[in-house]
Length: 401
Ligand code: ATP
Ligand code: MG
Image (cartoon, rainbow, N blue to C red):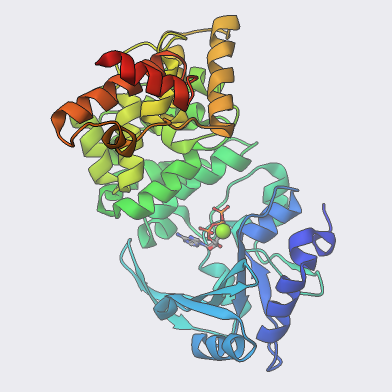
C-alpha cells in the first residue's frame, strides 16, 4: 500500500500549514475520508477533507488569526471551508449524529475519533491520517479497499434509513471500487428503501448521480439499478443503458452530463422533468436540451455552422449520441475528421469578424434590414468554414446591395 506521507497533496506546504494551525491547542487534526482512501490506492486526490476535535468557532478563529480565508459552508454541522493560497480544505469538527430523518441529521460535536468514524458511510471512507502518517482504520476499511468491497459502517438498512443518499453512494462507490460481488444485505436494503429516494433534494442526488455516471463503466451500474427497480425512483423517462455503453467508447474523458443525456428518452417532457427533478443549473439544462433533443445529422457540410452556433461541447455531445444510437462500432476517417475539427475549435474558436458597427459605418441604419444583412454575411462566413477574414466579409457585404 502506498505511503501517504510522500504524496504531493500531503507534503504541500499549505496542507502542512493548515494542519499545524489546527493543532495549535494540542489537539491532533487528521485528513479524513476520500483523500485518504484515494491516496492509499494511488488515485488522484482532488479535494481535501480534514477533521478536528476543535469546535467550529475555534477552527474559524485559528485560521483567521493566521491569515487563512474561511467560509462558513456548513457551520451548523461543523464544516468550515478554508482557502490557503488557492488550496481548498473542508474542515469538519468531530461529531456524531443524534437524530436523523433520512435527509438531514441533528449533530453534536465530539472529541472522539471513533464516534466520528462511526457516523461515516463506508469502511474505507472512515479512514483518517495525521501528520505522522499513521493510518487510523477502525473498521478494516483498508482491507475492504484492497478487496474491492464496498461495506457500510454498521447495518446497511439502518445506515440508509438515516440518510437515503447513502443508497446512491453505495452504487457510486461500487462503480469505482468494487471488485467483489455486491454485499447482498446492502443490496436488499437498497431495493427496499429505493422509494425513499424521491424524498431527497435534487441538488444532493445530482452530485452523486453525475459522479456515478462519470465512473469507468457506468452502464453496468445504471443497468443494475434499473433492473432492481431503483432507477425509477431517481428519475423517470430513462431508457436502457446500451447506448450509454456504446457512447463511453467514443469519449476521450468521462462526462457525467453527456452520459445522463443519452440515458433519457428523446422527448421534451422527459428532459424537462429530469431538469426539474435534478435542479440542474441553467447552463446544464441548456446543454442537456441541446444534446438530447437534437434531431439532425452533423457532417463536414454543417459542422462549422454547428460549432459556431452551439459550441464545441454541444457538437461533441450531439455527435457522440448520434454515433452511439446508430451503433457505430468504430470511427472511420469521416468521423475522425469531425473530431479533429472539434478539437481545433476548442483550441481556437472562431469569432465572426464583423459587427453592427461595421454596417453603420457603411451607411446602414439600425433596424431589421441591417440585422438581416449581418446575418446573411454571418451565414455565408459559417458556410465557408468560418475562414473568410474581415476584408472578405466586407467584400461579400458590399456584393449584397
Ligand atoms: P469524493 O470526494 O471522491 O466524491 P468522498 O468520500 O470524499 O468522495 P465526500 O462527499 O467528499 O465524499 O464526503 C467526504 C467524507 O464525508 C466521506 O468520505 C465520508 O466519510 C463522509 N460522508 C459524506 N457523505 C456522507 C453520507 N451521506 N453519510 C455518511 N458519511 C458521509
Ligand atoms: Mg471528498
